[in-house]
Image (cartoon, rainbow, N blue to C red; front, side, top):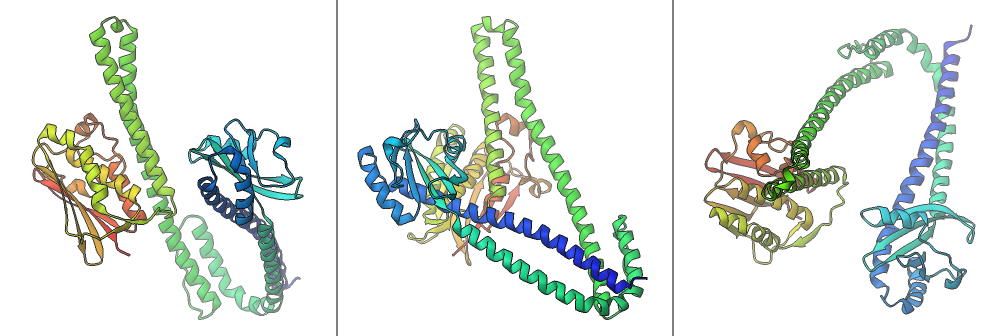
Amino acid sequence: MKKISSQISAALIILFLVGFIILLVITDQLLKKNLQDQIVEDLKIQCVLIDNLLPQDTDSIQLAVSRLSKMVDARITVIDPSGDVLGESDEHHKLADLDNHLNRDEVQEALRNIDGFGFSIRYSQTVKEDLVYTAYKSDRQRFIRLAKQQRFVDSVVWKVRWLLFASAFGAIAIVLIMVPRVSRSLTRPLTDIITAAEDIKGGNYDREILVSEDNEIGELGKILNSMSAKLKGDIIQLNQLQEIRKDFVANASHELRTPISSIRGFVETLLDGAYHDEEVSRKFLERTLSNVIRLENIVNDMLDLSKLEVRDKGLSLRYFDVGEHVRPILSDFEERANKKGLDLKFESSLPADYKLFADPYQFEKAMTNLIENAVKYTENGYVKVSVQKVNEEVAVTVEDTGHGVRQEDITRIFERFYRVDKGRSRQQGGSGLGLSIVKHVMEIHNGSVRVESEINKGSRFILTFPTM
């Protein structure tokens, strides 16, 4: 009969080798991809910089390309919108001999992508190795393409491979020495642990392992208890996320279905003969346009919210004057405010030379949503934006004398598609995502947003930005 220590040793070594192979493959792929992504991101930045440095005059591009190529240590190709090469830094290629580049993978991707960037990795017959190509569709009616060797990527990947191989051999040596000694003490308490683990595997996450040994087995029992509790929590959280997802899909479908149904009704009425009446046709077309604009607003807000949720803190942070960014937004709403007789105000207690450190674009997006809501739901009185420094933070407050928000609604108004007054909100053309966008803007700034409100007295939305 085989000893259990030998069986455990053999099983662990086999499992370790299988796991090591899987780890090696995954590490290879992830590491290589991450390094290639980093090269692409660097090349994107260089494409924009080179585009700004290159002259607009096509006759001067070739000389400039040759000079800039040495500075960035990359091959540079300048391509016009039709695909003809305007400049090429590689001395092995003459402009007259180069074919049309419009169908290059990276150029086609740059044409498709909203941000104007595209990339590809392929083998170069000139340098006999893989190159990373990155193309940028410039506003100056040209493409800037950079190509760089990925020797650095292969070098790092091989170093990691050798490190993993060395670690694997060391681990196998330890296993061969320690497993036979430990296995004898594992046999008895392991039975209880296996039984408990089977219960947990079957879904009994309340099953607790009784720990009596003050050794590794006892620690294993504690870990399994902790894992069981964590798994139970994760499942609860997953169920909650699934419910949120279901609510989002249901709410989004409902929000989109209403204007789509209206548009269909108007069009069907017109097709049934109402288009012969010019007044009726115009009224229906105006309503159709209003619903199309509402659909556009919903889709745009959903896209903005999606971008905010997936971004990795890659904000364009800089110092800027708050007043210079708030006053133009207030001016945009002057006409609507004047029709209601509302007074738009801006006050700041910050020093005249004080600058807020944040992303101006995201800041304006949050302020636009809050000011638009304030003007929309205030019938008389004023809408005021005030800025002050509180301890080590900057507080930007949007205050109105509008309808106010009930206390039971305050905890939910930042949820996607949640409406305090559903009928009124839809009539006013809101997407139901504005406050969700505000919340996510503050989260990616490591800030916060809170609400103070009284019915028929107004609301105050306070955005708190950390200072640097």
